[in-house]
Image (cartoon, rainbow, N blue to C red):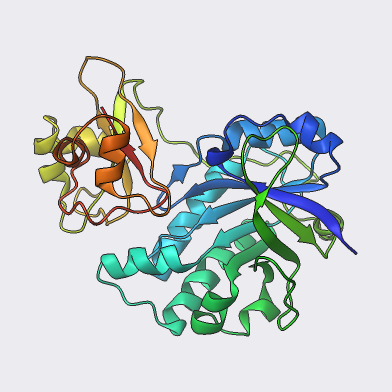
Length: 325
């Protein structure tokens, strides 16, 4: 069995999903978000469009967890985002070397034991909520950091470009990051499925397909005028509040933080925005530097550091969104 698929995120922009379906693509894996409750900016549209045109879709969440508890929180954030949509394919945890780098930059050493525990924590939480769990990685990360027992327990989505690798068992193979598809501008990841997950999930009664999923409680909607800030190592809510001219109580209320003393590096929080021109944002890509971003947008490294509370210009992370102006 060979099923034609693709995976996308906000980096593919606005997709014409009707054209994608007409081109013969039979499933899509959609990035739902990353880290601590940071949704992908195009997930809602991508999921709604896949549901509308009839492309079976699953979701993936990028790992920035530093512990199994972080991984469970990331799973909860993923579940909140996907709840309103029909998910006929697995819910997947994307863990790779960027996850490792982020952990090291935050003082955590990824061992095979820790990496395996993190994947298990995420996937177990997904299964607890009645969804089909999967994890994603590449050959080097799998062989270095993840137990071989994992792919006997959970489905594996495997990344290896250019040629097929048969040394491990996997259900989806991501074989290129430079595909071209009608309806999508620029490069896109392409995949081949070897398991009819839509049928497997439907027959097993998973992913709440027999009835409309019940979304988990939503936090109180924030005001329209706010910015986001990614918590850095050593930050406290009080210090962030002073930096942005607000109070820690306001930040706690805006972000549904029950204990102001419990925030962690990598967590994205909302900060009240003062009146003025509409802010601009940029999502960091792999290989970016702060100086290159500053040049691209006609600003300075110092200005970007000040706007985003960045203390070390050499520590920025792919997938995080920063304010430009």
